[in-house]
Amino acid sequence: MKKLFGLGLIFLTILTTGCSSDDSNDVNSTVSATINGAAWKPTKKVGATLIKMPGQGQRFDISIHSNSEILSLAFESELTTNNAMPLGTYNFYEDPEEGQISNALFFNSYLIDGDTYTEHFPVSGKITVTAIDPVKKTISGTFSFRAQKEGVLQTKIVTPEVFEVTNGVFENLSYLVFTATP
Image (tube, rainbow, N blue to C red; front, side):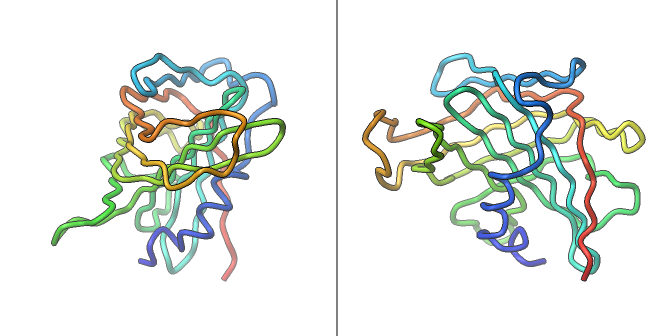
């Protein structure tokens, strides 16, 4: 399978993935994480999308927004027929060892004065899907990732050299399903 359907496509899609209303999440969904040792929760949007690519596979994108940051998670699998991702763990390896397969990707971006800046790139990460309901179209799981600063794109805030997300949990996120036409 092509690496996550192409890094560029994912990066663009993940930053613009469909979201729920601007100021609230689905009342039954929750998301939380620890970022660089501090508790974090989204304050604005959570969007989740399953993109099915016949003949290629499928990718699941989750975009989690606060007032100042966006966490973007993407993972892929073989194509399923039930509009769901298989339960299990999906990993990102910067330099995979023999036998390791990267089937996940993670980004964090900063929201500053209406603009989005991505200064960190992933080093490692994993997302585990613990429950998915293809009828209600809800997904639950855990996530963590580590990213390193690759440059400075803005000077309004100082960003850390390492951006580390631990204890990430999402429960009952509603998702949309899209099927691409070949």
